[in-house]
Length: 244
Image (cartoon, one colour):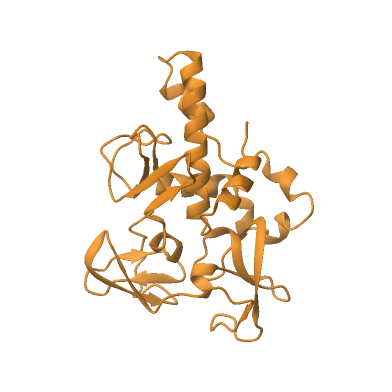
């Protein structure tokens, strides 16, 4: 459910207004990068993912059928914790299972089990036996895998790509709010082109190009989902900004 304006415990001094942005932002709740639907205080430059702005008190997940995850404003305890979906540090809002000790970032907890735009269909797996197109390794974090089983992307790898290319968000959050944000992002959106050409050097040029195109579409949708807004519109925005 979407509200145009909400009050939030994380920012009680002002109400947050719904905003749809094609510029990346750093969520002040979970501390992860976001894009698309969000709630924002323009006075204080405070941003939240939809999942962080309107969290569920508790959730279950098909990958952990015996767990009950409770929403927490901060990680429990004093020891460093990591997300069991993407293996990245948990430093803000989190879904935590007290009995098992598992943790999930809010956006990771709400990752769609299936991403489908009619042309590309990707399924979320806890583990896959095939190697990732980004890192070449098996196992590791949750992965999105195509219906044809040819394309695999670790959720962790997608997040690493975002951290590498959008590191400016951590030091200057206003740097992408200008009208030139699209131009600045053109060389910062992750691309699998080089990786795929290296991994498929034995194939013909035509097959490599087709493989890159299909994996590029897969990457667009996985990035959109990881950023908290797995919609065709946002996937199109990400695709238009991807390096050629």
